[in-house]
Amino acid sequence: RIGVVDEFELEEPIKSIAKRLEKQRVIQHFNFKNSLFTLAQRANGDCLYLDAQTRRCTIYERRPN
Image (cartoon, rainbow, N blue to C red; front, side, top):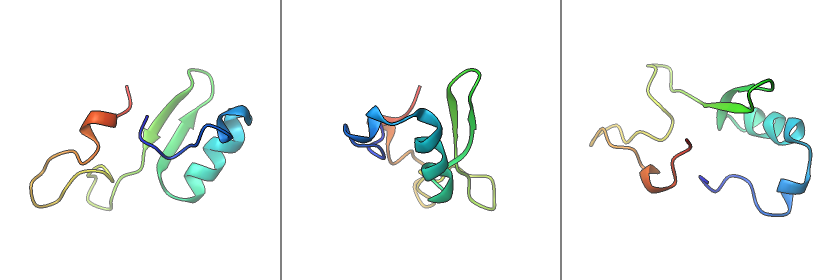
């Protein structure tokens, strides 16, 4: 939903997608048992997609479940 995986990549195994997203620091962790991604955080613990000035989510309309 957040636009980091294109429709062609969706055909690949979820494990390879998760590895790529971890390498790119988009996600912090992937729980294979429950198929849940944890988005990456900044050093201060804020979500990668949180605007530091407005303190609002920059991907709210496309946010993950």
